[in-house]
Structure formats: structure tokens, C-alpha cells
Length: 409
Image (tube, rainbow, N blue to C red; front, side, top):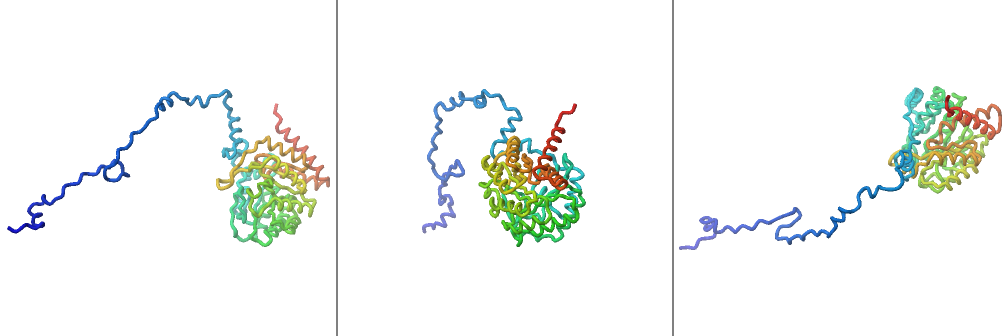
């Protein structure tokens, strides 16, 4: 017989050529590889650990103490003193702005395509200012030259761009018509920084003031100006336009300027602007503002107040920095009303004609404008020295406040 080939043998007896099956691989975990694995070591438990945990201190051992629990008011004050705490203290809470006057002003702003720093900067005093407040002196802060700034200060919520839209040539007349229709007593004109313009917007600022003077001659005008990059002839151009109060904010103490403000702004430049405005036109009231709660020390605040007074500034306001959004710098601390009252007394002792200091005080704060308007009126009527007029108005204001706060029978 001939030997069978492998192919023939496979056909006749398939089982003879079939390889023995491999043992199935055992896999305990998805990360293990096939094949034999060494035995896993047994878990070692520290002797006595479970017993120590069982017999150890409980929750009560961590919360017990000899001091009594805090009252809600004490707990809120303590929370407010913690740096970076985002919960607002009770003294910083305000009502939502409502009322007929607020609605009327807002409607006119939309119709004439005007902007206010009250809305753009999310000011907490908008309802009081637009509604007239307890003194009935209605005030608005108009922001001219658009709603987009060329600078990026870390505290400000106004939009920024290197190339904002061109100036609206009709804006000065629109602002004047709106203010004449509103029947306000006091207006603050402010603006975004316009470093993209050759004169940084000084001519537009002056044109707006002159238009208001023509259509609403009885209105008192405060201009909260940019620094015009320190170019003093441009400061003179605005100072000569017919305003009553020249304001420029130094914002914070010298040591925190770079952290808080845009790199194109600085402490000495702001002081120079304020000093030159007063020297160029001594009859102007000059004004500046400081934010507290951004990391300053008491010594730095005191030195800033002294520097402002040395620059001839007449009016100073101090208020709490409030973070507009999470994209802006954090609040370092919420300064107490008692500390603000202290700085108000310091400002008066240093010789400021008027010092407004409080958690909700802003550079264009309503109560300050009432006081300033009274100073301007009486100075115009009697021709008295500014210091004497300020003292007389202050006495009347204290008498009015005491009468309002006296308990009724």
C-alpha cells in the first residue's frame, strides 16, 4: 500500500490531525494580561487601628468651646471681615431701582442712544439718584463718547476695545435735549477713555458742556474726566467749557495703582491733572474719589488724602469697591461703616470743603451732589468765601438729618 498523504489522512480522520485545545486563560481584571499571574498579597490591616477609630474623638469634641455661639449680626460681621468673602454684608444691600422717574429716564436714554455710567458700571445707587432720593434732587450721570473704553482697568465693567466706534457728532445736542426734558438739578458728565483719538476726546467733552449750557442754563454740571494722558492744555480746554465741578478719580492709593488701573494711568499723572485744573481756574470746585477694600492700608489712605488736599482738591469721596463680575479683581475686604465714618472725619480735619465717605458712596453719589449744588447756589447768590458757604450748608444738613432721625411722639 502507498502511504497516505497528510491531506488524505485529514479527510479520513479529522480528529487525528486536530491539535489539543489550549487551556482557557484566566483574567481577573481588565488590565491583567493572559497567562499565569502571581498571587496577590493579602491586605494588611494595622493592628488596633479600627479600635482606635472606634474609641477616638467624636464630632462634639471639635465644636465644643467655652464661648457662646455668635448672633446672626456677629456672624455676618465676621464673615464680612474675611478677605475675599463674596457674601455681601447687610450695609451693602440696596433696593432694585424702580419708579416713574427711573422708567422715564431709561426710556429717553434708549430713544436718544445715550449711555449712563449708572447702568454700565452697575451702580448700586441708581434708584436713589434717578428717583430724587430724600432731598428730591434728581441726578443722572451721562457717559459720553460711546460705551467702549480703550483701557482695561481691573475694577471696571465697561466694555473695552483698542478700536471703539467713531464719536457721534449728534451726541452733544442729544445729551442737552435729554437733560432739558428731564428737569434734573445736577448732572455728572463722564466718559470712557479714548486713547484712539488725537485729543483723547477733550473737544467733544467741551462741546457737550457748552450745548447743555445753551439748552439748560439752570443745570449744575460736573465733569468726571479722563486723564488725557497728562496733556495739560486739554485739561484747560475742558475746564474753560462752562462746568461747575471738575472731577478726576485717583481711584486707589499709590502703591496699588498698577494692580487696579490700566498701565496708561498712574498716581502722579492724576494728581497733576487735578492740580492743574484748580490752578488754571481757581473758581472751579475740584473733586476726586478713592475706592476702599482693594488691599490698601490706613497709612496709604491717609497719605492719599493728604496728597489730594495738597493738589488743591476741594471734595473727596470714599466708597467700597464691589466686584462687578467674576472676571474682575476680587474684593480684599468689606470695610465697615464705622471705618468709613472715620475717614469722613479725617477728610474734614484735613480741610476738604466736603468729604463723603460710606460703603455705597460713589464718585457721583447723590447725597454729595445735593451738598455741592447747595454750595454752588449760595456762593453765586451771596458771593461768600467757599469755606464759609460749606460750613453754613453743613450746619443746615446736620440739622435736617437730626430732625428726620428724631423719634416721633
